[in-house]
Image (cartoon, rainbow, N blue to C red; front, side, top):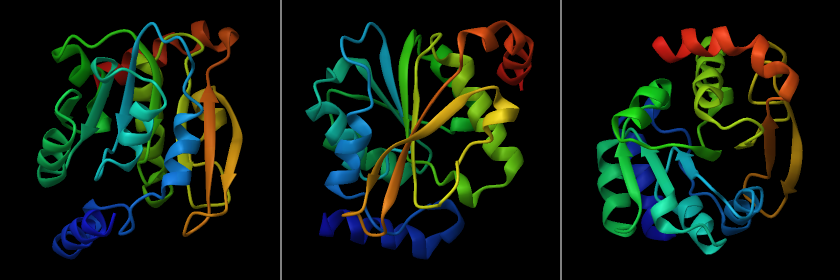
Length: 203
């Protein structure tokens, strides 16, 4: 973990705006996120913002097969680090803002869950909204988006996205303390948001 923290800090010094956190997610937080993934998966788990691999490791330890896990990381150095650390996992260099096209390019479907470590509360509201829309454009009906945050409020605009979500776990042992949110789109919202999802997919 010390080596991973040094890597994050080095990247943060080079470009503070591109790195969401200087500290590596603790093992308790990573495990709490992994616990929210549905059992008996029939699709892929997509991790957004793989970082140094703390959450990736927890997802694999929870029983998700390596060939069902897809990690998206936009930083080239962290991408290389993840590829070397997890040879059985598909690690893609890309941005969550272009998630549907990225997954389509690599023939990745269906998506049974998304696990995100993106620093959403530090982003503009418009970016939060677009990332949320991109995520729910690829998720199977009823499949969850799992997101952790250090903030006190929902890191996604639930009303605007037509989703519901709540805190499933609070990890007080983590430094700083964190909350794990789980979001889904209710069945009644699928039709109403279909047109919006198509527009976001084409963006």
